[in-house]
Image 1: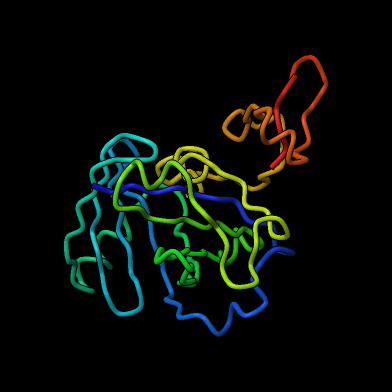
Image 2: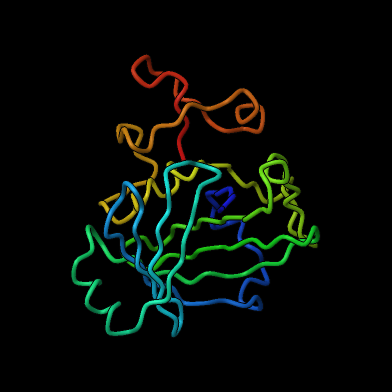
Length: 195
């Protein structure tokens, strides 16, 4: 069972000591979106992953894959191949922030995820890490489908702030609004937030 939350990160809120954190280079592509079937190269490891439906909690199975099998399946992916560096940032509460810094064509996109051992643990997360405090560095919570949409990045997202993009529309909660998230007031987009 995979239980995780995802966050969209603004570049100006990246930790100053990011380069000192352990990191891995990831290349991945999606063979199927429903259910999710993904291939991934993580440094010198090759992995075939199946993920069931669900947002915060869902079944996940990782199977080892050789370099030859990866190369064969890489030719069959739907959409674009995604390349990113994943930084592993330890938190004071024993959890780890996995911060993805994307390469071209998604350069400038920063997504963080935190995996939990239970849904109760995932209900509230303290994102404080040494001097990396949420009051200074804001993290915006996204569901898995909003952040990736089972590989949505591989299917042509080019502007994550475009309000007219149905796949990127999200209603801003009252809590988020109180934290200074902007809400669109135009009638056709009433309540949507820009992210």
